[in-house]
Length: 167
Image 1 (tube, one colour):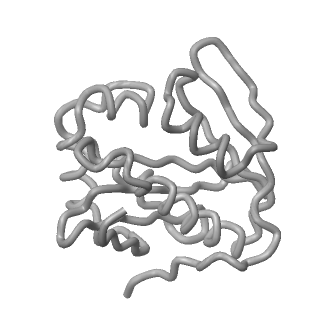
Image 2 (cartoon, rainbow, N blue to C red):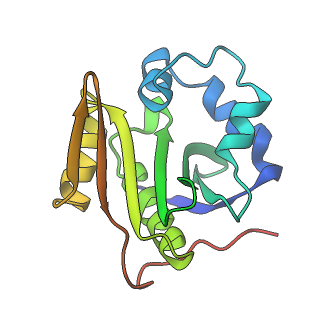
């Protein structure tokens, strides 16, 4: 991974996230969202991807000044469980950017009292399968047709770097 910087994201980053999503191939978009989001991401999609700090957190990955990745964690109801989702620009996939964003998100959600992590993906999404297998080898895998949900404990200590909101 060459010179990629990861920082916390917030509502001021709507335009950057929208530009990233517009640049995704149909395949990458489908792998991330399990549906087509169209050529222009809607306001509700952008709001969901940039949650307020009570419901979750988000990060952006930069290669120079270019946004090349987005990651988000969101609480799943009242339980101390959160779902994580990631997307990396097509030209930057396979370089460890998704793993770096996942690590940043894990540190952030652990610092906020989340005890379990869920990752929902297409069962054929090889990048997610590889990442979960490497990073959470004891994850419980629940197959449901063409999709899979992985569930595993969040880090119990905040030994990983916590992403701090940007003012």
